[in-house]
Picture 1 (cartoon, rainbow, N blue to C red):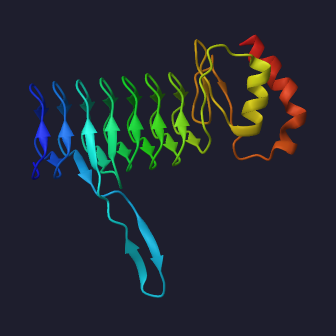
Picture 2: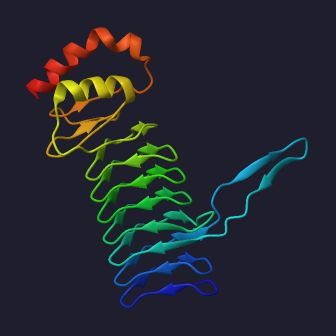
Length: 220
């Protein structure tokens, strides 16, 4: 436990956990073996011809109350401010959370998820195993990201879903939304879910198939 780090009442740290200086872990948390909280965020500036110059990571990590972190989770300290894990979040083994990420309350991050820097995960969102989330994105409240998905777009979560509008949004941006309905981008979605894998296809190549996709989604 590093200089100035704090651990709340009732929190359990299993063997091999490392808390870097000045990080904060709340009450009633469980941190499993090998997890590292507060290592430097991954930041380098090009300095040719010598190589790369390390960007100082001057922030911290805040883990709020009632969080469980699996084995060998890594949470990087922020460049400025705090990387924040909200109350009640549950993180599986081998998950990486980069600098300045904010994970909303009660979100679930399943094994081998990787979240790039400055992304915000909404409350109650679920990220399936091996999902990869690019940096500086917003993943909406309650959004579901399928296993082995790769998301490079904002994922909204509107209160009401019009499947035809959603089909067009998916075709244009790779959007997945949830509020009573779940849409997966990539991965091995269950048979009762529609997989939306358009994020790597140019919009003008998708137009002819949008109507067909909308009909299929309406039937689902």
